[in-house]
Amino acid sequence: MRSVSPPFCVAHKISLRVTAFVLGAAAMLASGSALAAEPMSSMMTMRANTEVSPQFYEDRLKNASPVIKQRVQTLQAQVASQHLTFTVGYTTAMDYSIQQLTGAKPPADLMQRAPKQNAFAAEAIKIDQQDAIQNHVPYPILACHSTSSSFDWRTLGKVTPVKNQNPCGSCWDFAAMAAYESAYLIRNNVTIDTSEQHVLDCAGAGTCAGGWYGPVWDWMQTHGVTNETSLPYTATDHVCPSGISGSYKDVTWGFVGTGSSVPTVNQIKQALCDHGPLAVAMMATPLFIGYTGGVYNEAGVTGINHAVTIIGWDDTKSAWLVKNSWGTGWGMSGYFWIHYGSNNIGYAAAWVQAPSNKYVINPKIYELIDKYHLIPNPGPIHELTPNMQPMQQPQMH
Image 1 (tube, rainbow, N blue to C red):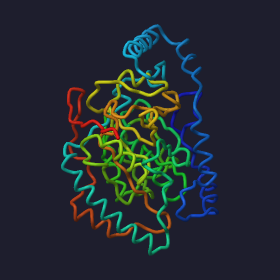
Image 2 (tube, rainbow, N blue to C red; image 1 turned 180 degrees about the horizontal axis):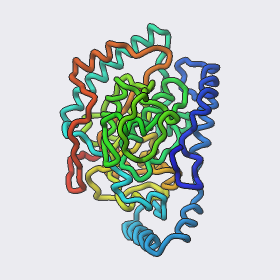
Image 3 (cartoon, rainbow, N blue to C red; image 1 turned 120 degrees about the horizontal axis):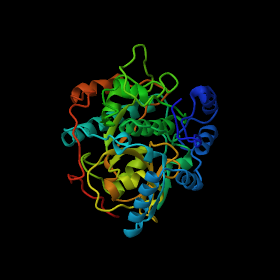
Image 4 (cartoon, rainbow, N blue to C red; image 1 turned 120 degrees about the vertical axis):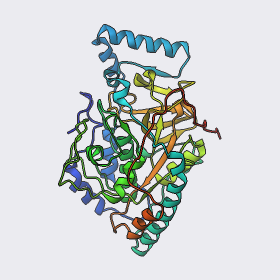
């Protein structure tokens, strides 16, 4: 069992001890094209994501050391002086360094890879759609419209509980798995709990010193990831264990836009509706580590260092709703609102397509990997520091 900041562990990962029951419940429900979540899966997810009380942060601060109290006061003064629209406090994330909490490091060839990856994804999706028709398994009709003023995948029970990467720069791993678990829920109406430790140990996509989410999905196409029970998370790097095989693979994945910039607001909304929650990068700062609520709107921040998962939006707030991987003792029980364009949120946004559990993935898709020379290896990685400014800001529509 992975650790969560006590006593608020309700948003921790759902134990796979209940998987058999969930599968049974899902089997009794319609597996057609309507998106409506099955009662069991939806109820479990929403209950697990119950928000913590603001009193939690107040109590932590009362019992904090003088050093922590001074840090919080400094952050609060910064929020007040800049007239920012969010609050800060003594979150559980503040117990760790920013290096232990972040770790998004994009591949050096990200710009060159994106067009090839998107072309591959388009062909793979066509093959999978044809297989679905032949197997009489219709694609889900997603109850999401990019023209809506607001949307939240949690309301449909398609977001798995908040997890905690703890002091390990594996945000890239958790962002990849969060998007995949939601994609699997959307596709199959079944809640799964994938093993981030399996990815960390075996995918070759990164370590506790950082990595990237795209290579995670590359690896999953040919290897598959196991469940949390089989290989629990330890927040440490290990040699890939022998005898561990995974059954959860993906059909394909793709970038929203060019992959090497921040897509427009409309592009991100459309991708959220077309594919489900998105793995994205952003820049986390000391202010962000202390975030406890409101709409995050830090200005003038460039670069990226953190990976998270966008799950919705609200135009009245001009903000994205995002799932983090710092446990429930941070933010709004692990979630946050962030203003469109703030902290480069949405950089290299990407989606993943989960397979149907009613038929096997077509071998033709694996042949496409060779056709496009896509190798399940992250290659050299590089840092995007706060002084680098390769991102285009989202356009408001």
